[in-house]
Image 1 (cartoon, rainbow, N blue to C red):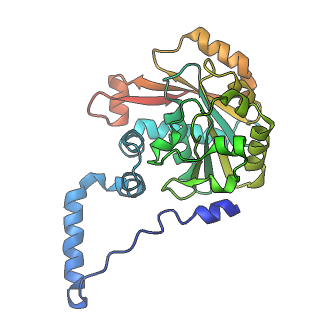
Image 2: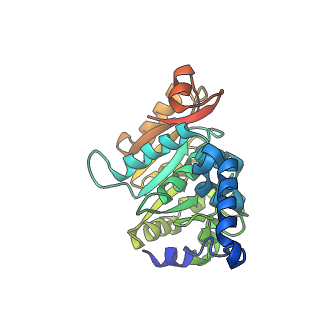
Image 3: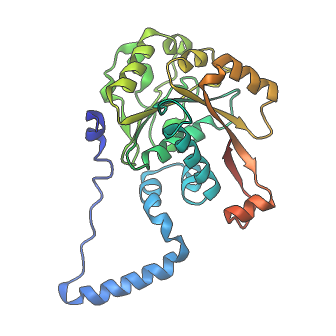
Length: 288
């Protein structure tokens, strides 16, 4: 395991065990508590593990909902993770850039979820990097303040190790974007950004790097960032981006770089709902 992740493995270490009841009452009270817990939790007991690190650490409700209560979303990200870890040919993609053609398509939401599901794997660690310096939003999903971040490293030379933040989930860490600068394009296209990516990608072999990139139509540097990663995930909002927009973006990045396209806010039909066990109208992300 990498040194940085050893230092970050204390996420959640401040959770203290609850003191047990007096010895002569332990057995009965434990049985009563177990019975009460089963009555209250019912079929929702499978949510206990994930809720303990999400709800309690100020994660965004949308992220918690997607992880805990939306099997369609969860399965989509598991498939995307499998495609990263077990490609049809070549080596696994250890660095991924998540982008979209236009703003408002949910790329940061997809990036956050992908990081969570990578970190929940058996052997994987994940580092999220918010490269959307114009409209940073990745830190918000994990209940973190923007504070210092990538901008401070690229502009002022702030040490990288001091920028990595704990998310509340073991094996998942984050480099926030920082305060939006006046020259985001120049910073992301700089040699400093190239050096940073090479460092975080090559230094630790047990870590997957996932970049939240600016929308391609709004920022020219997205194409530059794409050249530094193994693969690119395109996020397309269902019923929003046009076919020509997506086609142009694919050609701009290069088809060989595209790992997959995630259709966000995909409307489930009746069959989808039955297959996913949903009892009401929902939207979910579908990966193809």
